[in-house]
Length: 239
Image 1 (cartoon, one colour):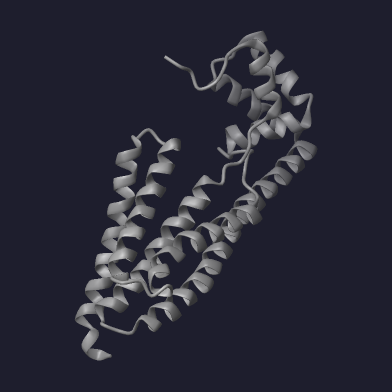
Image 2: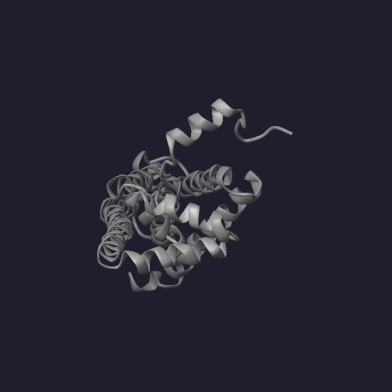
């Protein structure tokens, strides 16, 4: 059975030296699915209401720009909140170490004891960790607060969401932009493929097989589109 990475001494050293890197997969999937769903929901709603194709282009483009930027800004703000909170707690721990080092050492001692260390081994590890303030604070952040020291850039997270929203969200309106025959059928097919591909791609970071992950995302998008089409169909008399 093939392992995901090598366990040779040199390979381990190189991997640990490289450190953990933030992933923007979640941000891209988040933006891609929402972009395809919301834009196709507009298409399905307008077609269900029997409105002009020009309405699809106007509303679709407005959704791409406005909703795409809104989602990117929201993701940026949410990610930045996590980063800012990590910095805030880090400063709190710095202050506590400065004002009450004995109390902070006792916290580390009890955290290490929970890991099964005791006696001289516990005290030696305690002395080693608290001799370096950064290591000391990092341990408190992860063990006391349950925080991750690796976090994505708020700007890159927002950008990934925006790009995915624009790329995937443009797919449902392309057949109408090029005035294709049976534009709605083509749009529905292309959007379904996008849903499936996004789901299949994200299975790389999950335990589910690619086809199951793809079908799951396909069903989610299909339900949203069906709801929008149904609403538009039953309210078309208002237009």
